[in-house]
Image (cartoon, rainbow, N blue to C red; front, side, top):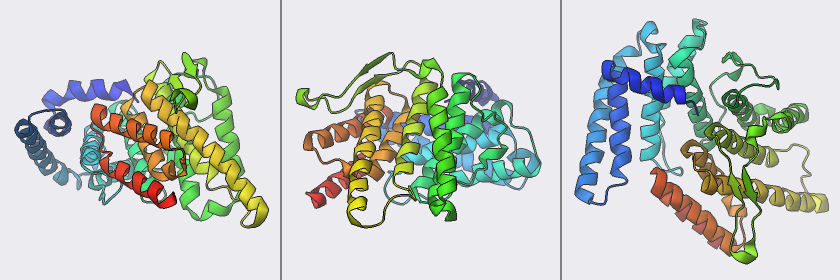
Length: 346
């Protein structure tokens, strides 16, 4: 989401073993997915594990040092190693999220010392927040990052695309918090989030408008719309907005509980869920940005069972397979789970 993070991490790595080993760990592991020779691929995977262990040996002693733990390199390393962890674990299944703990410790200590979020540490923070939200949804818990203390203008005033993306990421964190906290039945809180999401969508910059958009056409075998967006930050933001809208749909406290009204409401919700799922799948196919594609995978893991059309199911599986092949994001377990869910519903 923030090119400053990538540039600064690479600039610092030659002089910072912590960053160097974390980058070598994730790059070796990532490369192993794209090698045709299984022996060479296994070697690269082993290199990744070795660099990972070297990084851990440097990281652990820093946990007891309040100065080291709030350094940008520590938080950056934690987010990079969390990516290494995400690549190694499927969306479904056990994920201890060990490297998120380092990020939580760094952010908590920064809050305790009331340190300003700036520079490299700020860039790493936004990646940590994305990872926190992702893991919170998988485990159906509240995100641990306090988005009200991140030093960002959260109004709807005009600003650059990256800041606009950060705004919706904060909103998404609040949506997930609402969904999995005791506030989950508060109509007032739900309405407030609904209004703020509408404001974000209505007032977002023109650069968020796709340069090319074509509606889906099932009769021609096109299950998802073509959504071509130029800027990565816009693709990222739209993916998180669509996912937040999906979560809002299934946690609406105003929804009838039983009877005819409930059935009618379920029909309307299904139409809206499929609408946002299709946008996410179309965006993942037409405007490939790996972090945004991760949200498409997460959305399909939670809402893919709502897809009933067989051609659309195949298209969704193809999107997941494409993400696996192009980004080395593990989706095989998710594809199996979706097929099992669809089979049980047919």
